[in-house]
Image (cartoon, rainbow, N blue to C red):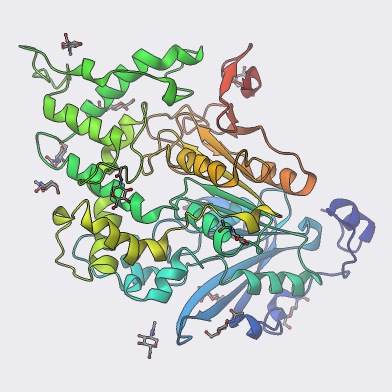
Amino acid sequence: MKPYTSVACLLASSVTALVLPYSTPNCSTFGSSASLRQYNATFLNATHYGPRGVNASGLLNTVSFCEVYASVAYGPYGNDSLVFAVWLPEYVQYENRFMAVGNGGMAGTIDYLNMITQLNSGLGFAVAGGNGGHLASANNGGGGAPGVYIPYLHDQAQVTAWIHDAISLFTPAAKALVNSYYGQNARYAYYDGCSTGGAQGFALAQYHPDLFDGIVASSPGNWYSHLALSFLWNAQQTNTSATNLTQPILNFTKQAVLNACDTLDGVQDQLLEDPLSCKFDINSLACNGSVPAASSSGVINCLTSTQLSAVKAIYAGPVRSDNGSQLYPGFSFGSENEWLYQEGLLSNAFSVPILQNLVFNNLQYNSNTFNWASDVGLLDARAGTLIDEISLNLTAFRSHGKMLTTQGWADQYNAATWPIEHLEQLETFFGGDVSDFYELFMVPGGGHCGGAADYASVPATYHTVPALVAWVERGFKPFSLLSTNPPDGSNRTRKLCAWPSTARYVQGNVSDWTSYVCE
Ligand SMILES: *[C@@H]1O[C@H](CO)[C@@H](O)[C@H](O)[C@H]1NC(C)=O
Ligand SMILES: *[C@@H]1O[C@H](CO)[C@@H](O)[C@H](O)[C@H]1NC(C)=O
Ligand SMILES: *[C@@H]1O[C@H](CO)[C@@H](O)[C@H](O)[C@H]1NC(C)=O
Ligand SMILES: *[C@@H]1O[C@H](CO)[C@@H](O)[C@H](O)[C@H]1NC(C)=O
Ligand SMILES: *[C@@H]1O[C@H](CO)[C@@H](O)[C@H](O)[C@H]1NC(C)=O
Ligand SMILES: *[C@@H]1O[C@H](CO)[C@@H](O)[C@H](O)[C@H]1NC(C)=O
Ligand SMILES: *[C@@H]1O[C@H](CO)[C@@H](O)[C@H](O)[C@H]1NC(C)=O
Ligand SMILES: *[C@@H]1O[C@H](CO)[C@@H](O)[C@H](O)[C@H]1NC(C)=O
Ligand SMILES: *[C@@H]1O[C@H](CO)[C@@H](O)[C@H](O)[C@H]1NC(C)=O
Ligand SMILES: *[C@@H]1O[C@H](CO)[C@@H](O)[C@H](O)[C@H]1NC(C)=O
Ligand SMILES: *[C@@H]1O[C@H](CO)[C@@H](O)[C@H](O)[C@H]1NC(C)=O
Ligand SMILES: *[C@@H]1O[C@H](CO)[C@@H](O)[C@H](O)[C@H]1NC(C)=O
């Protein structure tokens, strides 16, 4: 470790020439003195941790840091509260960069795992994360379920803080703490989030475009209200014993798709590089005549007509019952094995609680009575305005910021083509290419914010943040991203390409990302 007192060393390791104080402030006395009042924030406590001092889900911090907790008062009466933490590494490890991380699901907790990931990244971040403006006790510990009262969904300021303002509420105070600790503002500000955190990333670009220079918004639920409709739709399509798509049925369907389309990309690897290029006719799986749908030992031979209808409805996605217009995209070829959560679990955890608590304010509301025409406008008005972030006018953010999105083709939560549709909408709004500030990386065999259960050999760590930093600070627009660390523990790497380009195998080891080009 470099000595704190070597200014030359500090300058060499920093992005820009800095004049820094010679010693790290004493953590135990830091913070209480920092003026946070102008941000409606209150200092709570500060604790110093050495390396391996914090353990989030098995991940330990590699560098020492000063942790400061503070809370932000918000809401029309100033009695709502958001708690956040800022992790301040020692000067030698600090590279003049601020990083805020987002939340998952219904928030209510700080994402310490992502905070450690960013702290350990070697990019010299001071890292901040908040709880989304309410405690987990206000969202039933994240366990939304039919008939369960979810307190935060009844407080409009808390609903707004959940996604739209989750990050913006604490970022000015967190930046002030960074300034006070290092004696100057961070040179660059970044954000990283996935799922609800991806939606929070879009909220930053739309509502708070000046706060961040770079945003990673992965598997984004930024059309949250209609994502919830997609969960509800998929649940309703599979809610009887005749339409139930069991795991063996899903496996059978996925395998038939792969048998037909795996080699379209030139590599036989049980992976579709671009599911959109697969033109499989699902009707070919229909049961005919005397063949039983499943053998006595449970082997699936074909799909019954009701199962086939259910599969087609999930590929199609929700539509209005009056005029058939699309309400959210459907699922993609190759994702079939991951559909089990769609068959009620996600609807019960998100859609039904949102309808019962936020839209209809009635815990007895029966989601089977949802009217797929007239109730859509109600959902848009009562929920969409508070939880969606789909504005195409990202002009203000575009003038200075960069944004990266990743999306797994086999995401078990979110229909994979939504970010593609949204990118195309952005291109239409801006009248052409938007890759000067926005790029989407689709992940073949990728799941929700990482690996998909059925694609254990697919690298599940996407190296987005280093690519974003190089783009923001040095103008290197990423054409490809490295992905590593498959859940199966192998050393396979893959090349992710900026959509609409996809990876084409050229030569060499098929398990090495350098054997592919994006085109
Ligand atoms: C930091 O301040 C506390 C309280 O004044 C003191 O006990 C501690 O020794 C100081 N630590 C260092 C490293 O100076
Ligand atoms: C602080 O809270 C007040 C009252 O809720 C609000 O008007 C003001 O904009 C807030 N200030 C900041 C910096 O958020
Ligand atoms: C600091 O405050 C946070 C948030 O209230 C709390 O979770 C934590 O336990 C506190 N830490 C200490 C050392 O008091
Ligand atoms: C970190 O926490 C995990 C549980 O999440 C535990 O299994 C592991 O032993 C802990 N590691 C250390 C070094 O304490
Ligand atoms: C905040 O104050 C308002 C007005 O007194 C009250 O209706 C509301 O329940 C309070 N909210 C919280 C979270 O305490
Ligand atoms: C679907 O099948 C699964 C697994 O056999 C079962 O747990 C579930 O209750 C079934 N659902 C319906 C609606 O029949
Ligand atoms: C489905 O396929 C996966 C691997 O692709 C396998 O692990 C799982 O056991 C299969 N499940 C069933 C019920 O066939
Ligand atoms: C059923 O018949 C149709 C039409 O001949 C055929 O396309 C399909 O492959 C058959 N299905 C099965 C499961 O054999
Ligand atoms: C269907 O109806 C909705 C609501 O009136 C409208 O916004 C949409 O444009 C219509 N779509 C078509 C295809 O007519
Ligand atoms: C399944 O959903 C449909 C559409 O909402 C509804 O009409 C039907 O009653 C539901 N069936 C069951 C068994 O819940
Ligand atoms: C887009 O937003 C900018 C401000 O960021 C505004 O000046 C412009 O009028 C908006 N454009 C449209 C078409 O709404
Ligand atoms: C991955 O492991 C294999 C076999 O252990 C080895 O031959 C190969 O060089 C490794 N690849 C990389 C990129 O490390």
